[in-house]
Length: 83
Image (cartoon, rainbow, N blue to C red):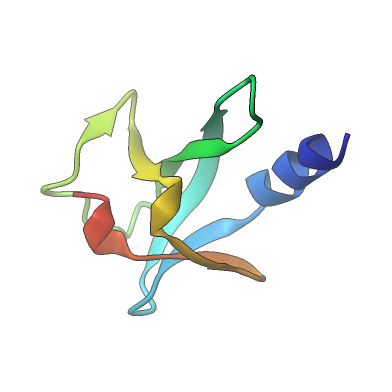
């Protein structure tokens, strides 16, 4: 139940890079079912974010969970790990 609440809370957050650029909002989350470990976040890029050079799949950027640096009001990520 605890991971379900975490997933619900994280899906409402916007994603920002460590250099202060708004990337977008969480679209989906992938995790390893047996362990419950988060694997990746799928981010729907904001209209103002230049997604050139990023791999888009179904209009979402896949972000490995290792790129997450902090989770507060925003999910702060190292955007260079997205490429």
